[in-house]
Length: 136
Image (cartoon, rainbow, N blue to C red):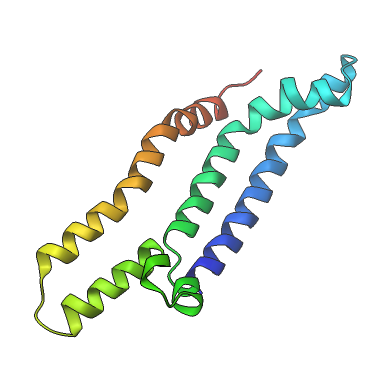
């Protein structure tokens, strides 16, 4: 259920943020630009940070989705990352001795891709923050 709520919340936030980005494109129409040039030269550069953040939210929601893996996947060869972590916890945690080194290592390994995606997309977040205070 967490992923459904996260996706729904991210969709609402993305819709509101993209609406706020798109409302600033009215001046280009006065200058004689057609719809395609307004989209490619004005709206898309303004909305790039919002699209990057939405992509990050949706990627994180898909990456950490445990419920779909629990419902649909039975074969260990097709487990998603959270479902594999749950299998490790069941095997090395509750089912027997606690092997913390295995569980913590697996948790760190599964967190690394999201951290890497954040650092790759960080320039878009910073540019979005920097452009919000500029008048013009």
